[in-house]
Image (cartoon, rainbow over all chains, first blue to last red):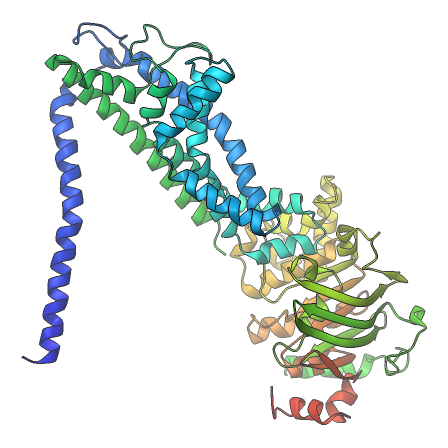
Length: 285
Length: 282
């Protein structure tokens, strides 16, 4: 056979293989989401969302778990955003580039890969026991903040790196100090990327169950938490708890709670994508 | 008929051949005659000896052009005057640069203060992604100036100096990035002028622009000479010929020749200068 024809056939074989590979992932996701929707969609109602926990699956709702998730999200943002962004700015712009910064850099990347349950153990030992905060919202939020700090730091550094040096040069050449240049030029220009990274990191945090179980978050909380020192539960823990019950009713509840959690994370990712596009449109170098 | 020949005519009429001090004796020690002096400059990037034993004087209200092939050190030399090389790792400088009797590499010099006196315009127009107004007002704002009418006056003044006011006076709130390349570069020049510097450094300011924008900027440089001392790096030899009073030719970190632009272009003393100017290399 002609060489050209052989090459064309190879091309065809690869594109078919690629198509199959793409579909494997997608089909699995569709099956999973479809299954969840069939099981849980009928259960979703205003009562389910505002209901308190109950031993009776038909009366049980996710209000306390959702309130806990919102609290955790809020506190985690409050803790991780300033620390992560400040660390990112320091490492990218201020820190001397040398051996120590290399070691720091490698370790931050490593931290991003540490299993979340290890962070749970750290949180339990340091925040819950050493700081004597107990299994409170604050402990859980600080633990999750640690978990997502590396992601925020890396996102911050990448966004800062993307700001063209010509802009920084222009600012310095007009007599701006380093901080003025960061505050007036670099941060506004990189905020889109930083916020995107922070939101994606938070949407990971909101789906975490393991580290929170380890620090002592409860599966059953009768009332929504009112202060950062209260006991709490979150949606993933509630789901985990319901799935491990024998009654069919709780399995359906779990499916419905998964839908709520999915909507929440999709929403957050959507906001992240919107912000990224919005900022990209605003700034064209 | 031709814009550039017009400039040449103006140049011939107003060229201050008689009253500008000629930096022909560049070893002269009486620096008070000059606005800016570079003395025994040696610069290094790590092991690379980028500038070798350079001495140069810049009279007030003159335009000095640096020419030479890429990598000859002319941009490095230019960036010494507002200390933009300070951030480059491994950069080292020996020698003195004296602006109005003060060595700008003195430990007591506040770099931010120095850069208010020595403005800079870059190769690629680099306006901030802000409004035209905020671009021009930036240098004053970072000095803590927030008085609105004061800023408005300064911005209007600076934009008039670069002949951009009539084009943008109704669009001051527009993003500067929406302007054309030539307009952007004029915003960048206005931005530098707004802080009222003594010296303006220009690093190939027209290399990214079309011919019409280029001749506008050249005309502008010619006018700015009345109030400022200007140093310009250019790859465009005709440009150096049109707008500068003095020309310095650099080659591989050496200052090969410096003198009145007219002399350098018509009667170069050094063979390498002649070869470069006539296009035999470079």
